[in-house]
Length: 251
Ligand SMILES: Nc1ncnc2c1ncn2[C@@H]1O[C@H](COP(=O)(O)OP(=O)(O)OP(=O)(O)O)[C@@H](O)[C@H]1O
Ligand SMILES: [Mg+2]
Image (cartoon, rainbow, N blue to C red; front, side, top):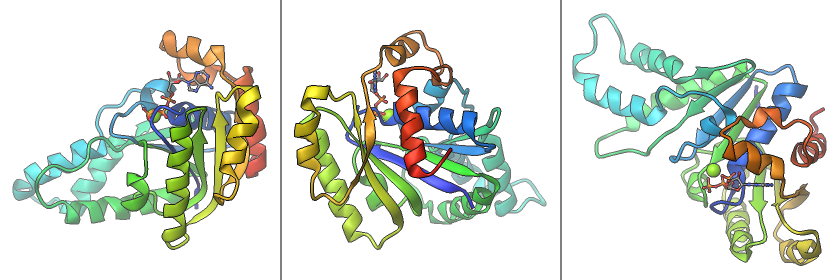
């Protein structure tokens, strides 16, 4: 079964960047394959990874709902959903990407969602890792789209609101019935002289300190030039990710 890593935290703290660097690390240092899941309706992960996405789970859901009445003869709904799901997976060297896309419009999606969940469960054993980039906040936790997670990483930056958000996430995790194995926090782009203040605020939240990523010019440059994050193996951020992944028990 794939080991799962989910990234969460307040808007703009660096979730997609960190998810991409982790995927880049796993791609370079493990046999893979890796399933990357973009669970943010804004769909940024593909761009940062340099992967082209043709369609999302949201598109497939809408498509099925539209065509459910006149399915091709001889094709069951199950087959249709499965075929659609395989088309949605963007396959690249060692890394496949699924993009969740927009949420549901009006209509009954229970049947489709149950089928999608079943196929996702069937898919997971084919991967060594699943890395999930989530939308900001806690919606994904309360909706339980993040069902079983081995490593949940809450990203914090210098903004005190990111710490408030982490606190709410930690509380919510306590209320959910233990489907997250390890809970961490990770500092992103926190200035060294501010680190101790931030660390003090994190005491007692029940999140383990995973590490710190410095502000990295190479990330800004790659983003500005529209380049994928895979090329960043030798930068300070990528080196910090190496240490972080070893702490998680990879490499
Ligand atoms: N360590 C870093 N060094 C330099 N730039 C960074 C770093 N971390 C994040 N950034 C930049 O900050 C911006 C926000 O990062 P990112 O998109 O990863 O945040 P996010 O938490 O995924 O945001 P959202 O909540 O909107 O999904 C991006 O332009 C990214 O390139
Ligand atoms: Mg993001």
